[in-house]
Image (cartoon, rainbow, N blue to C red; front, side):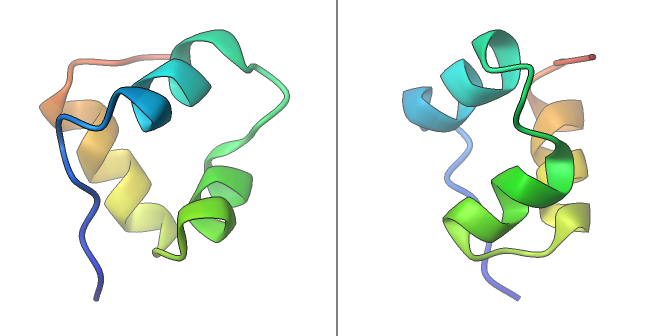
Length: 48
């Protein structure tokens, strides 16, 4: 499974500001599993 770079500002920006992008859309955009997005959010203490 491909991991997301945890300091990637683009992904953090997507999660914080682009509310139209659901977790599965973000996963598709970056070519990872949805669980990787959930883990990324937990690591960066992002909640929606």
